Image (cartoon, rainbow, N blue to C red; front, side, top):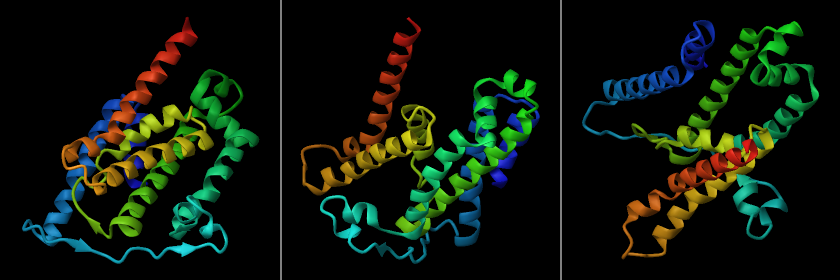
Amino acid sequence: MLVAALFALFAVGLRADQIITGTAITLFALGLTGTVYRSVYGSGGVALTTPTAATHALPVLSALPLIGRAFFAQPLVTYALYVITPLLAWWMQRTHAGLALRAVGEYPEAAVSAGISPRRTQLVAVLFAGAMAGLAGATLVLAQAGTFVEGMSAGRGFIAIAIVVLGRWRPLGVAAAALLFGAATSLQTLFQSMGWTGVPYQLFLAVPYLLTLVVLAVTAKRGQRNVV
């Protein structure tokens, strides 16, 4: 949230370009985490290890074929996501505050005429987004990897942009798109474990990013058709 507040200071408070500000803060955070890590653990490559969060299998549901363990034998933070996503969808569609947020994003002039403060709404939205991004990063370290290395997110933040576009800026749609990209990430591990020695492993690593490019291309093409 502190990093998000820094972004809000420039993008919301000072009206700086959002793309330039976001890129600069991303590079700043990447350098900051790397510097702190090396200053604490040294530059010799000593690995930080931490116990990962335990999984909690839900009775009956975790025994379902194919999807049981994938969806219902997970850390608690995953189950929190199952609650946050529909609540956020309901909040954006059924509450006055959610309507205000959508109005600020789509029709800021109408929001001002309705007595809504765009800057305050944007500030709260950015801080909430920062909290969710921090939760995602913590999950990556504490619930999956159990360690920290520089650049371990491997561009997932940029893939999130494509996920939002594919989900049409709706929480449930974004969640479905995130599952699609998560499946693509899992496929790269599956392909490597199948022993396809004749194929460079870098090609498997590129699967989620290739899917990102395809989604962006298809979305842009649909947008041009709608305009025509």
